[in-house]
Length: 148
Ligand code: GDP
Ligand code: MG
Image (tube, rainbow, N blue to C red):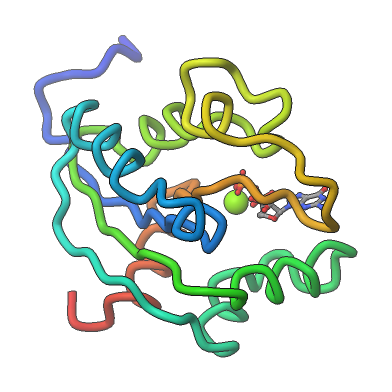
């Protein structure tokens, strides 16, 4: 059986966060422009100060890891922008556009590779979050946009 994408519907939604470092550095517009330039549709968007409950739910998979406490502290350090994007295979597509987790080595051409670097802090300040599976996308959209 072919593994090529087919004409069957593969439209999906993903949850993107412009993290507090991205907002602080005035990169929200640049990041949104890259998402739109890639061809994904912005379905919902809001800037907010994340609550501890929202962050704990969002990063539940990382609870107990050494970077979890500084990660939650960083994510609460200022406003973030939560975005729902839509398009064929946009979960995988946005992860590719974002680049790998470590911004120092993320490939040039990606958001993290072009706009991010190591700032010598306890957590990777890497500008964006993107859902990594349909299940996590559904879970994360429910956290940030319960009415969707
Ligand atoms: P992502 O899916 O690429 O965002 O990466 P993960 O889901 O593995 O980690 C969530 C977030 O925690 C990352 O985006 C980083 O901000 C931070 N993080 C992950 N791994 C590390 C690590 O090994 N050290 C530090 N300091 N931060 C990390
Ligand atoms: Mg992740």
